Structures are given as C-alpha cells and as structure tokens.
Amino acid sequence: MTSPQNPWQQNPNPQHAGYPQVPMGHPQQMPGGKPRLPGTVNFASILGLVVPPLSAVLSVISFVVLLVMLSDYLESTWSVLAVNAFFTVAAVVCAILWIVFSLVMRRGRGWARIALVVLAVLWLLYDVYSIVSFFLAVGGDFGEAISQPTVIIGMVQMFLVIVTTVLFLVLVFLKPSNDYFKAAQGR
Image 1 (tube, rainbow, N blue to C red):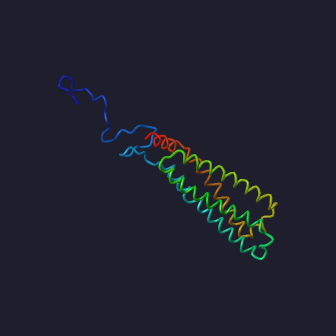
Image 2: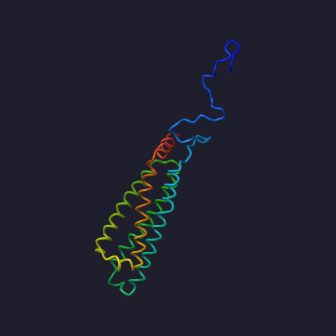
Image 3: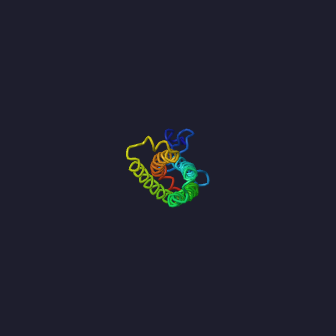
C-alpha cells in the first residue's frame, strides 16, 4: 500500500500476483494440516498392495501344480510338499502383512515404512537365494527346466520380486517420501 508522502513505498511482504506462497522442501499441506501424499509413497504403496498378493497367488498356483505333478508319488515326496506348503503359507502371510503395512504407510506412519523395508530386504535376500539355488540346480541346462510349469511360474515370480522390491526401496527413501514422513510425524 502506498502513502501520499511516499508513493513508491512497497509492501514488505509482496505476494506474487495470485500465487500462494508455499514453503520449499516440505510436502504441500492440505487445509486440515495433513500433508499431501507424494507420488513416490503412493506408487510404493501400490506396489505393496499389488505385487505381494500377486506373488502369493503365484506361489499357491505353483504349489497346486506341484501337487498335481507329484500326485502319483505323494508318499515318497512328502518332505518336498511340506517345505513347499510352508513357503506357500509364508507367502500368503507376508502378502497380508504387506497390504496392512502399505495402507498404514500411506497415512504417513514411519514405523510402517520401516516394517516394509525389513520385509522387502528379507524378501530380496530370499529371492537372491532362490535365483542362485535355481542356477546351481539347473547347472546350465535350461531347456529341461524351462519345460516345467512350476519353474516358469517361479522365474516370473523371481523377476517380479527383484524389480519391484528394489523399486520399492528406492521410492520410500526419495526426498519427497522422506519429507512426507517428517511432515506426518510432526502433526
């Protein structure tokens, strides 16, 4: 506002014509004080809501195919089936945990992000172990191994896990994600 004594006086807090001032470095605040969900956390949570259940479904399908393939030999292969049953149940339980923690993470809870990071690292380590075991078991003869339906399902699952867990780990620690969790912690 100008005064008649000094027509060139400027307002000490000039606002740019019609543009609201937003502080740099923090997620934009919504009217209720809740920080806006950044795309990095949104996409990471979608990965957590989609990929683990898909992986669990692939595990269940692989187990059913294995049961059908070994139906004639069930008495002599009970240990193989028991191990596969354990890992199939573990995959379903982990998928449920991923869904729950992903939904909580979307609300800005840092502990859910850490829980998912631990699950992701464990899943990644298990997947690397599975890949190494597969290559050692095949011994370079991929032709016969690729003809087995459980192997094809397993290869798709291993590729899916490697790509998505690494992507998830990167997304939840990018600057917008870190800023979101800091802002959510402060409210």
